Length: 474
Image (cartoon, rainbow, N blue to C red; front, side, top):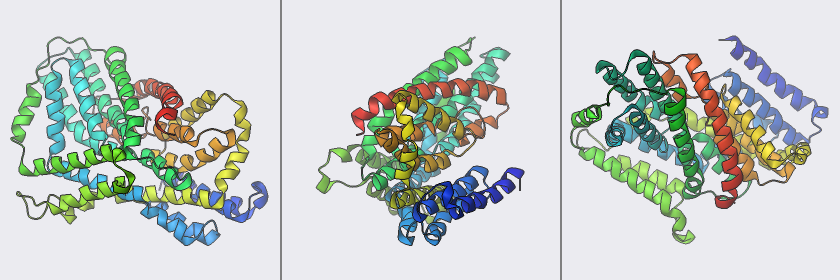
């Protein structure tokens, strides 16, 4: 066990004891004081990884009722929140896409369409990565796209399209486009990034406000496009500008598609289910409420359909239960733990107390508050899980919003979006770690490129939330 883990193992219970057993520190009644103390313990173990993060996420189930922070039902039911099951359905569909190699066909098709030239190849990778990441976790997307990116690099190296310095710039730009586009693409949909789903769940549970899949898409998709355009121009025109000696052939993508052969029955079936689920998610907001399916129901219909439709190349359905071993169950527990703490914030009125403590911030311009918050959250996420950051800060952000008299959606939106945009360090996100495993990138490359992407993200997200959120999410 590392020193950080040993330190956190002691610090978590110590902070809990200080906050819980010394009421004078906070002046809180017993219930909100218990929730605050439990949150400090859980957050410390999340940050330091004193225990496996999913295991730490189970603490609220028993700590909240034992300490009197909330009742057992409230603490436990958060783990069965509809958003958790929506995520489960999305993960199941993603596993089916991976199982039958549909993701490779989608990526290669996009790359074959973008044409030749190093910039276009990077653009193709950005589009393919972001498009997949809207529906599949950013970690899974990066792991899918990394072999494709490395194969592209090997192809241009073998054909001597670049001189040596240009080859390294192209390789670095291509690999970082995978990492960064995987994170940015997830901003567009509820299931694309855990902080997005945390926003929706906390809004429903703590504010009694519903954000549908379509609502979030209208909110998040334009932001994704803006950041992807910024990413493309930054990587290709500024940070890793390449002088192309020859045009890059599109034969690589075409050959990969040829190797995949015609679309199999299984690929067509998975694509059909995936398309229907996506269409239902996108159009449910236009259906009268009495006849409307919830986003969770749509997700689970798609997931169950994967088991229902038979496969031809193997026994059973498109998915069999054995495949579910790959489902990220730990992430679902982590999400449930954050929602359990959020439920405790609401039921104990801790949110209002936090709002009272932060009322002094109302003297600052609202835009400055958003910039400060975005900067803090983004650089916290550089060294912490974005799920842990969003689980801790989204419930608290409601109290901040109440304290300064602002719309909670604005504060929550800044937290959720910036929590997914850490670009500087290999440990910041799974996509960063994935591409850093190659021989082409150094920590210096990622820090330099990531710092300016962080700055761009803060500016774009704050302005976007400030101007666009009141129009589409209110």
